[in-house]
Length: 135
Image 1 (cartoon, rainbow, N blue to C red):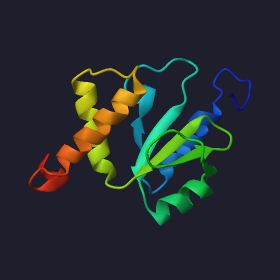
Image 2: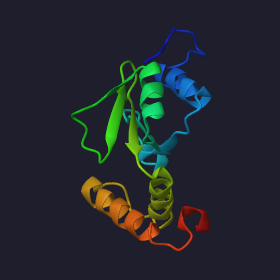
Image 3: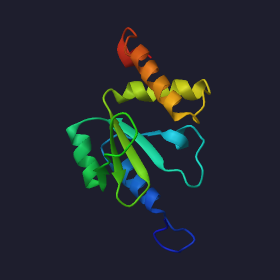
Image 4: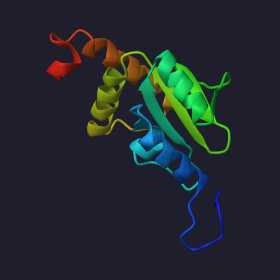
């Protein structure tokens, strides 16, 4: 969706993403845009650390909790833009897991398999001596 018809118009998604970048919350790109399989119709998916502060910040940015989402974790969807934020405990483990999945080129087409790989890798990473900082 375009905010105005000018050639240098900004989409609603770009406006919301700029507001997200200006926020004190760290949002990590995930989904098809992270894995470079996005099409012109793809939504934007992000992850963030699960906390009450982040939930309030998301609401201030125009996000509401999406109870119909098929992701593991709390999912918030923006009211005007096709943007989702998945809240995860220990989000840095999930970020590292997706970096491993991307580096190994395991693909993104089978979302159930991808979700299983995420969960499996996160479980392994949590057992690494020294925690996430050791990675």
